[in-house]
Image (cartoon, rainbow, N blue to C red; front, side, top):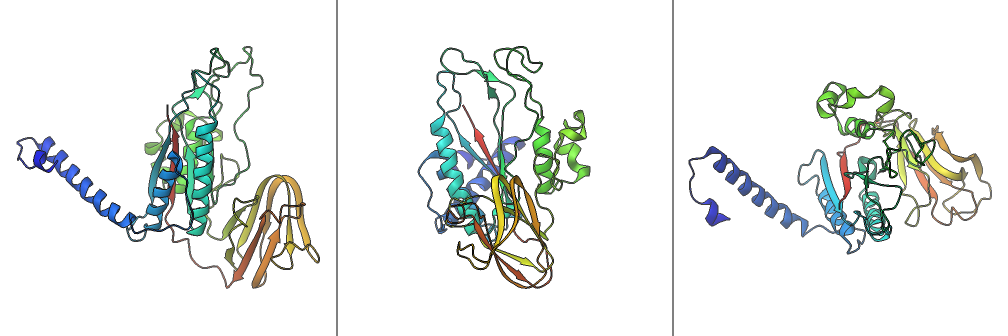
Length: 341
């Protein structure tokens, strides 16, 4: 490249391209040198997704040194163009393994609350077979995950029927989507810092859909509710991949919101063990949320009292300190996982 770009050119386009290429190569070399010195707390696999998310984790760990205010990373996994098979277990297994390591590492870096993972794809698949697999379609499913995402919910309108008589079925099991992309992205980009005044520039097609078809980042009515309030701490109440859920530190008077799907309870324990003696069950339900507001300083222990759940790691330690202080210092990070053909 150096020999190719050493000559002067009369074209402003050529010179601009050359300068940008040189700058990109220099930055790549500089960042590459820094990445070599980064060590992570979590082992990653050798599949496509894990290797990419391992690099993303290193870049996030370098965010202060790289002076990264906020960042977007794109991770890809091919193998979903399943015209000749219904079996997509291998790419899905890679995504599962990669995300499990990534979430564990983000928790280790104490930045999972500042990360959102969004899946995107260029099209869905038909619900009927072509004889060997499925063909290209329209309406499909995506997921959003993050430390402050209120998960455990399926949103959107499920079709009244999946057969050819349905109004949304345009043939061969191709369904018209019930929610636009703007439903997902309006909430994500608002969390990312886009103001309402900028929304029409970032999402020019959003105006084509009613407000009910657009999520936001602060309420419970959208696709997800991401915590923009630094005094509200969300706990995704579930059995974790590791030994237990990460400990939390909150200020006196701040809120801790537990959110879950499936049948669980929130029980205040007397210590960090799973001994239920002297414990106090605060709520029990099949899916739901529970808000706890501490009124005294100290260390508090919570667990799910459903048999076996605490032992499986569904417990959290919350330390309550002085009065509420500042906004989070970690920059928001958006990771998009893009299934490709």
